[in-house]
Length: 140
Image (cartoon, rainbow, N blue to C red; front, side):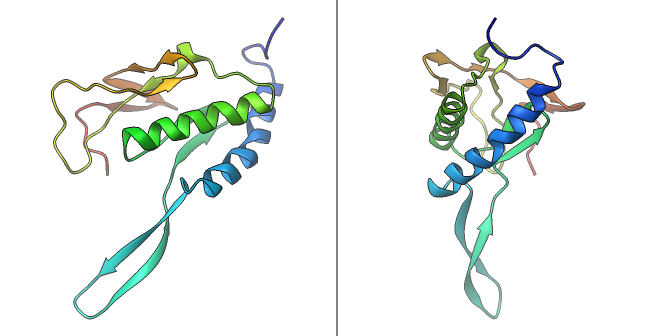
């Protein structure tokens, strides 16, 4: 028998235990923060900004990225951290949703984000903790 069974009370505990390792690695790779320039009518200054890079509840996780390259780097990091802890990401349950932010989306979305050797399926909608997210919905 491999892994932890669905519904086992150890699953969220193991997942949460790995959260610290993943967060530390994200920060060392520069994935958890960036420097932004804030401009108003009287002053300009550099401000250290922390971006939300993931949503986590128990053993469910959503990774948030601004670019395909960033998504790939985060997915690889995520997978490597979990493998180092003896866990495996279920590629069949891993999906990619691209949402509009500022630029219009092309009608055909093609990505090159993979998990280990598996291409991640691109979907046009998904549900996370009862919240339905859709391809043509504007991200705010």
